[in-house]
Each structure stands twice: as C-alpha cells, then as structure tokens.
Image (tube, rainbow, N blue to C red):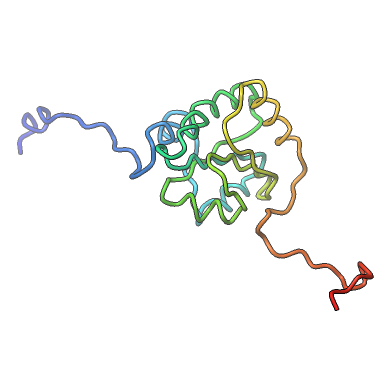
Length: 162
C-alpha cells in the first residue's frame, strides 16, 4: 500500500476492554486510574499510600456501578492527593472481589500500603459519599473478611458444646 492510501484509511478509536462498560474504561483512559487484576493488584497496592479499587459490576444488573464510576474521580478531586484509583475488568471482578470479601455491587475497595482497610458498597448521596470516603481513608488497616478463619482458644470461654 502506498503512503497516500494509508492516509486515506479511516482512523478508529481504541476499543474499550471487552465486557467492561465505557464509563469504567474511561476511568483508566482519561482519569488516570490503573487497570488491576488478580496478578497485579498486590504490586500496585504495595506502591504505597491509599488505593481505591472500583468493582462496578454488570452495567445492566447494577446500573448504579456506572454512577460510582462517574463520581469516583470527583471524590478524588475533592480529596486531592489522598488516593489512587484502580479499576478491574468486568470478567475479573467476581474472583478478585471474593478475595477481599466483597459480595455487593458496586463496591469500592480501600487498601493502604498493600493492606486491606475496608469496602464501601453502593451509590450514596454526594455528602454521604464524601463523608464515608473520608472515614474509610482515616480507618486503620484490618483483615479482609475472607482471609483465614479466626481461631478461638478453648480456654477463651468456659462453655462447651458437649
């Protein structure tokens, strides 16, 4: 093909991630969010500071996930320098969400210095969302709800099942 014929070809916009909504894709392509998955989330989170990962869920079943995808960069602008955003492709959300004990859609997963902090599920009124995000950013690190089973010493309580 000649250079002239190549120049006449139509330019195509980059395609979004398969099965991931355009609003979630926009977070990574236009708002500086990072794509994370089961293989990359630990290294990304270990880079330090507060990190917020969006699990938007299926756009048809959970349309409020699209609202959270739009509001999340606004929360970041209102809390400058407080957190980085990660997004998960739709087909990888369930396995990764299960790893952190998330069972609701949409959910924001809060991590700090590579450690679990908390989750914030659903869409909220603006003032509530801002307050809840600030509270999550101020919360101490904790144990993800699905990591391990808490052990209780037999001596911890005098009652017995026998």
